[in-house]
Length: 233
Image (tube, rainbow, N blue to C red; front, side):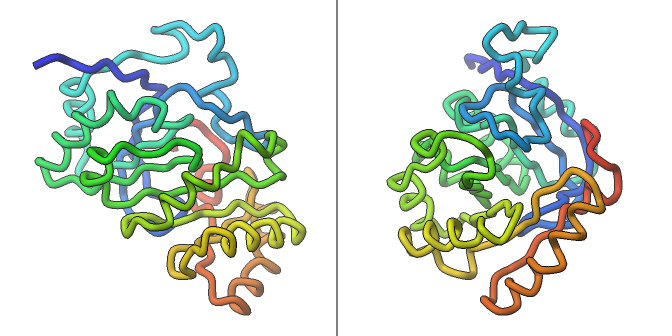
């Protein structure tokens, strides 16, 4: 069988620190390359140098067997494929994900919602964690918001939407997106932006009250609380 080589930034074992699967032990497969450049991104090492990126320095090309061998060293049956933007590599990921599902792994993909998932990919994924980027990302609107693709995601059952909030002004922008594509409340997760415990706590105080008022799910960033803003945790 032909081997797909996937550009891997890192593979590590931790817990899922945010979103619908908060607290679950998981193996993270972080794919290199991204199509957006968010100002507050905490994984800039997956795209900051991508125009000049070199295999073996910025990322490692790994095939399905090599990735599965590394994943198998850990006890968790939960895999989070993240980035960067993993759907840039979705054609290479499909066979890996199919193999993992045959081994009874739970598959979660974190995506920015600007790339339509392949139908063959959708049937193997347990949860797409879609995070539409708001203006706080400082990314051009036309690049970060694709309503046709967000609408497509919203109609899937295996999807949640995670909004990153810096200040109260972001909430109106978030609500506009939710209303325009009619996202069900049960699929919405709101999370404070922050790469240090103090910032997250400060923003959480008023954000939790908003979630209580509107009946949204709140998500902290447990990995920041536990490990700080460090790579591979």
